[in-house]
Every structure is written in C-alpha cells, then in structure tokens.
Amino acid sequence: VDYCLGMRVHSLIFAAVQGTPMLGLAYDPKVEQFMAELGLEDLTIALPRASGDSLNPERLTSGLRLLSEERERLVAHIEERVEAMATRLRAANDQIGGQLGMG
Image 1 (cartoon, rainbow, N blue to C red):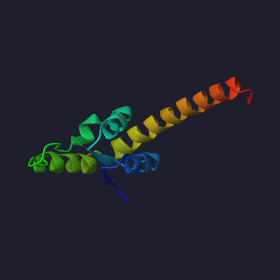
Image 2: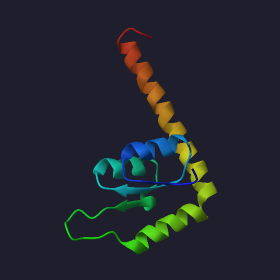
Image 3: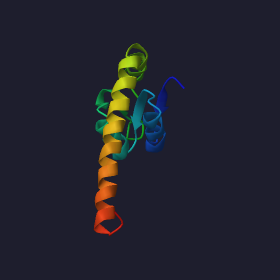
C-alpha cells in the first residue's frame, strides 16, 4: 500500500507501524490526537460534525497531493516517530513490570 486514507484510529496505527504515509479523517478526537502524536497535524482533516455540512474537497485533494509529493520524507518521519513511541512504550512496560515485581 502506498498511502492510507483512514477514518478509524486503528487503520492509522496500522499504517504508521508499516511506515505508510496517511491522511487522517478525524471524526473523533482520538484520530486528531494520534495524528498529532505523529506530528502529522497538516495531514489531518476534521470531518464535518453538523448535519448538512460537507467535507472540503480542496482540502482532501491538497492532502492527497502532499502524500504523493512528500512520500519519502513522510515515510522517514513516520518511522522515526513510531520508533520513539515504541521506546516510550518499552520504558513504561519495564517500569510497570518493576513495580509489580516482574522485572
């Protein structure tokens, strides 16, 4: 897969772990928060919350264009951020294991 256009946070997590550039369609704050954790706020599009509102097609097109034009930079950026997240997770797991007498 070259890119991910994801609305659900789990699809975005999977894309990040694979180093796949993504465009997050934020229907829920957790999507915005995950994209922010990756430093990809500029690739997050808030979905309309009110009935009758519509998605801005220009914003979607420009986001998809950015995925294509900046693919290599985005892959490197995502891989770096995911590794930092994994390092923090391992440290937290070690700390919890130590507190539970498992380490």
